[in-house]
Image (cartoon, rainbow over all chains, first blue to last red; front, side):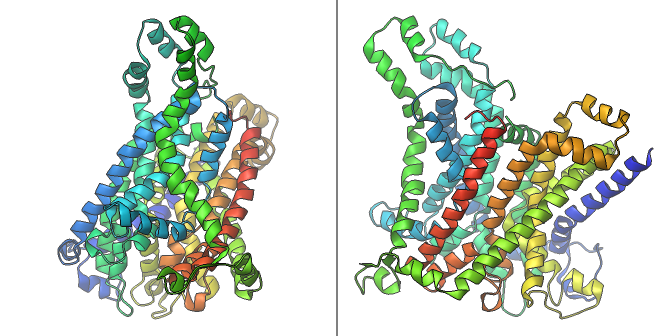
Length: 279
Length: 316
């Protein structure tokens, strides 16, 4: 083994340990008995793992409810955004039409807009919509689905575009010669072919919705039952004594679903990103 | 994905083939718009309209009294902007935001690029370990990243204080120390993107080029600066601009870790400042003006981004 390789290995392993440590510490602290967290004699392991924090968080603090809320919102966003993004991606890759470049650039610009600043107009918009359409006003989960969908779409379309473009035209042309109709080509031929890309794109939409803090914080004011995880986490922060065991257990519950999704599709994700970035 | 240059089906030809006349052709021209319809139905009201409304609110006197209907809303032109630009606070927040974002971009790139190179030289198992760890940091929600790092640096029960033996020291009291910890959290979240993207880019460099460099006696350092960096320039530009855009918009970490902007607002960045002005002080018009300033700055960065994409050969 050369010296360079040896140094690279040491740096890689060290970086891996440092990078993973916060996640490890989170899960460990979630499993530590309260006494050990309070103790000044800090140890990077525990001999008495316990689920007490999880039980407290899921039972007493109504966290189970928030978990279900978050999951419901995120999955609705994923399904809707996959459908809408697929159609839009087909439009901008398979057709040449006037203003096509303009449309594409608008999707790009939309990704840069500071969405937190848009909470101000959106707050009033959602309030006004809620006055006429029940279910999507302030304090509803519907309002969150709506805005998350809007904010995950530009990136989803941008990413899907790479996957749709990678499918050779010839397949559709052959189908067309065989007399297949447009909808058949779209849903029976193209859709299954880009399904892997759709999964990767969906992970991003899922993460946008799942991680959102600012809209949940702004829109869900009084309806405690409709809170989602990120905003609900703040419940555990108390002025003097933070319940770190509870916070870490709640954080663990919030991180695990994303971690699973991410690892499951990581190969495609990198392929898709490479495509989105490099083309 | 490099084979993806499209030769889209020519609508004319299609019409010809199906042998139908005019109405069909009209439908062919409309079809992309039909496919774009669902996206437009979501984005126009929930994205386009709020942007317009943000601009509109910024030229109105819109505060709690107007929201509750106690006072009529009145058009005040650029008064909000005048107030903003005359306010020392705004300028100091703006400068802080720029400095903080710049430091984050540099740190993210330094860490990401170094580790990308390390990945190309490390053995299979160290490479796998680092990839997985980076993946985990990447995937962790901003919110949980913030809570874990807060716990690590907690004054009483935090690991850092216990290891250093400085019980009770609060890291978040000092403006720059607080920024440093928030910054570390952000870099922890964002370096994986840079690392993975650059690693993929380096892998895509033909091995012959690197072999030629080493045959010519180039050191690793020279190979990096003289061969890899120039070849990856377009990719690096994109990563840099993408990082600028993300780091300029940091919200969750600041909001959560410094409890809404730190002691006396010392850790405010523009994004949080806009939010607090609107929802904290009920100055919705003024908050919108800050939002507009941010949007304009990001728009300018975006124009550079589009130019960089264009140069790198991206087919729009």
